[in-house]
Length: 95
Picture 1 (tube, rainbow, N blue to C red):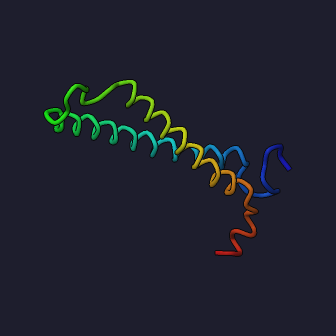
Picture 2 (picture 1 turned 180 degrees about the horizontal axis):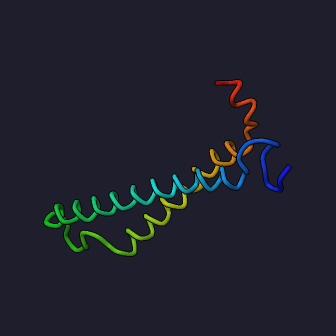
């Protein structure tokens, strides 16, 4: 058995983690990009309704984007961990 492999046959755990986290990272990045674009567009639309504040604050937007990104990565790690520990033979029998 190779070091780091889940079972005698099947993908290594690190490869499974990498695959799932790469896909999650891509989706999170796209989601954050679309969300920030929407925040800027919405801020421009409601600028006339705001008194004494800016339509967008760079520090607030950046901190919220970082917080959402970290939470999304943490939420993606649990399914990746679960998938990495699945016995491939049992998964094929379940199908």
